[in-house]
Image (cartoon, rainbow over all chains, first blue to last red; front, side, top):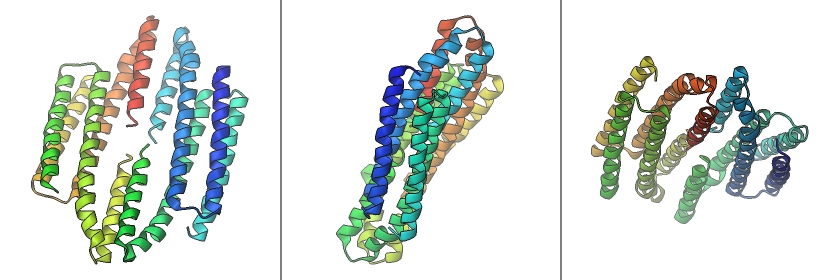
Length: 91
Length: 91
Length: 91
Length: 91
């Protein structure tokens, strides 16, 4: 992972951790269910953003390195992995 | 929210907070991007599970209370909110 | 269903039927897989649009009728059905 | 596209076309909105199945051909296209 991707990912994760703790607080304080659900959805959106950042970096580094290499097995593996993990994004 | 839903939600959130910290650690240790993405997807799945628990409780308590009440405005509001928040689940 | 919703839904469906036939033609003519997949995704988006039109009408007619009625069983049934079908939208 | 994938895709499309016409009929006959929506969701699921069949074939033919070729530009293009179209599956 490139160093600025790493920084950006860690900052996003710190924010997400704060959001998760915020939801625990909301539940402790008996806040309205719908507001809790909306906040949980916001965290999922933040995680999808993080996922995109990590995948974009992966495409530009590991996958491109495999594509430019002479190792056919590695190229195939990288593409299969990618397809599997992008399939998982639908969930 | 019912007291056992509250307990279950708080336990799930504690676990999710641990998972988020785990992803920060993975990034710190330069773990493979695809493994990071898979872990992020697992957290999103855990949040969807939490969302379901909170929504099921909301249906059985607040929404049902509104449906059995004589307050038409409240019934409509509860249903509109529900439709909006369930629409958000697709994201 | 209101009569203008019905018209709009039938027009959308005629267009969607044409799009489905178009995909068969693309496959017959050995068109590029990625273009086929993009067209299939466009049809799914058109169906989601139709779904929204039908659901919005349903909310304004059947669901609202149940909410304003004195029949608690009907109110509950309508809301349960709605939650189930909105859950299905995620797929 | 391989010949048996083509056959399977065309059969699926014929069925889907019938399902789309069925929904028009349901609307003509003023069938219950929720049943219409469920049927529309079933068509979307059938289209997702078709999408998967076409993409699997694409991976085994075009993408693998690019990966085994010496054309780096083609390899990159095929992977970029794939990522874009798999991103579209979330919708």
